[in-house]
Amino acid sequence: MSGSAGRIVTVTPNPSLDRTYELPAPAPLVRGGVNRAAGDRLDPGGKGVNVSRALTAAGHATRAVLPLGGPGGRLLGELLAEQGIEVRAVPVRGGTRINVGVAEPGGPLTKINAPGPELTPAESAALLAEVRDSARAGTGWLACCGSLPRGLPDDWYARAVAAVHGAGARIALDTSGPALAAALAAGPDVLKPNLDELAEAVGGELRTLGDAVDAAKELRKRGAVAVLASLGARGMLLVAEDGCWYGTAPVDPAEVRSDVGAGDASLAGFLGAGGAGGAAGGAAGPAALAAALAHGAAAVRLPGSAMPRPSDLRPQDVTVTPDLSPDLRLR
Image (cartoon, rainbow, N blue to C red; front, side, top):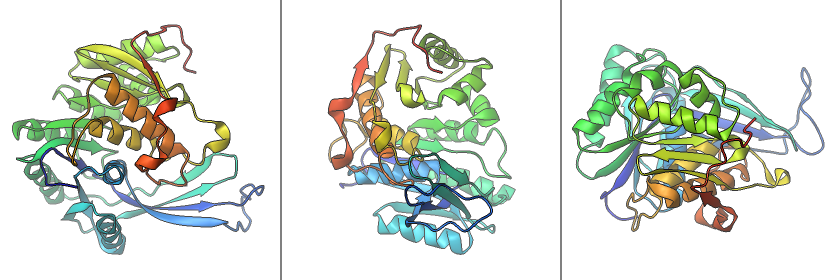
């Protein structure tokens, strides 16, 4: 990994430690009883943290900006440092949250997410100041990801977009609800919703690919420069000024282990596509969409919130086309 030129900075306002337990086959989860795990893992968590982990696995320079507090925060920082990720921690008085997941064989992952600490106005301002500092010389992209913790106003991401643009960098935003709506007018360079978040943002039900394209175009009218939408098992959609592309990367259901972090891995692939020597070189066009699809498909074949390495990718399985089928059913 070389230097800081073109590095990608991630911002995770509500990070976590993610503990995942895998139940043995064929034992399902027994509610109210004792469940014995066949394996477990502890991963640094939070959407932006996952993006940094995926970027690091691919050899890209990255910095993780995040509020950390208590023993969980210290452990999270140590785990990231062990993975070779530069950490810029903003100390907070509340404890970093710990999330728990239970993976059933051949079944869904059950997650329990803690609320996380409530940040004070001073801590909120300090986090925004760190975002502004990290957006200065040497940074190509900032990826601001995840829900806002208690204490941060709905327009905090909008302020982050303005700060990043003021420092001369570009910003990708992956959030939902009021935080997404408030940030649109500030003009994020890439917006990365999933299908439900895209539907919520436009206030309608999206049943077909044509519906999703129209919704993405609506968000562009409201301020987003480009929209990269995750469509679940149906693939991904990129709507930008220079065109629209749709892509798929089918995964055998028998290979699926966990979809936690798949969207984050996709964003890492999108931002890092084509970069050389640790630099950020992607985030545009069909090649970046193909990289996003390959990373997302690889992530669902891994346990817990593990992020894929280049050896996990199967680019030969990816198909990207500008020929959109508006009647393709998404649900």
